[in-house]
Length: 428
Image (cartoon, rainbow, N blue to C red; front, side):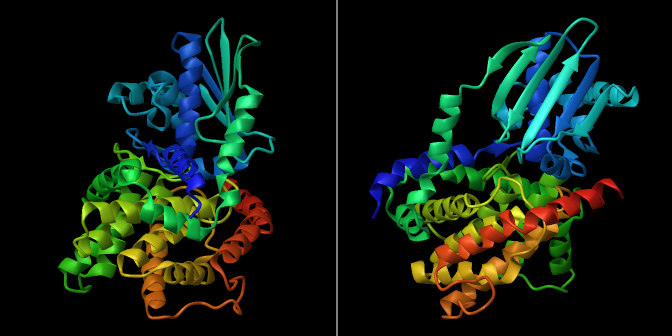
């Protein structure tokens, strides 16, 4: 076992698995706006934002918590007027109905503009707030909360330390020394006290799931499953519960519920996809707390490992790769070992690779549901000794090569797919 990697694994999970209120792309814009307004030290009269194409794609159609609206303009406005600049991805947690009314008035007065920036960064948000005399610009880049510069009236107030940024990049590359089996070993043998913090993912995402099951949010995927169980058109059981409870959390999250999700790799949906299927299986089996902790850690760290080979935002739906983390946790809970987990992930790569990300919106709950379904299917196949083999498509004989093949597709040919998706979206 590579125990020298364990501290790095723990640091990585603590950095990548954090609470997030609302979709992380508009929230990133809201955070930049909040930080800019704090430096302006007064209520801005005009807000201007420029974002990377990928951030624009993920911010156009998703609900912004507490506002009853979708899109980046309302996120920028309410963030500037009432955002908590120190709350990270929970920047909007304290907004009120009065704040929302003021933000909507700014939109009605054409005092907020949002455009696409000509930048190479996958994740980039530049927000400028101004009043009659002063202007402040804040830039967040490369991660949803990483401020790289603050400027007031043309004078720099803060520029990110390049040495610190480089060190952060080195930390993020912990997986260059690791394999999927190293993650499996860590999850099973790390001291429980070092990893039991992951239980917060269960509590947060489970509360979001309960909120989604009220049927008040989005496309009501989770509530639809529940209604049809009640009607007798669907049976209950493990599969239905996984789909019902996982998609319900995404329903609520994508339609602006004022409850945080525990995110993974900068995405609430990825956090939901890596959490809820594992929680449902653990409850189904009456697993004890330690077993649940280890399964959740295996899921979340495996999801981060798989995502680490890909761009932060891409044309490949992140819920699919996060569900590949979930299949690891579920397969282990159901009695599997590493060879079963490896086979299950390979089968998922052969099944759902290619589901596109066409922006964040309520229908993401359908993709979350489809990914969770693929995960339990692959887990049960693997336990019966069945898998998509290395002779089929992009799947290789071993899991790590299969992961790299899928990621090469996401980072290569699918970059053009991303451009085409955004072009279609902005010209509808």
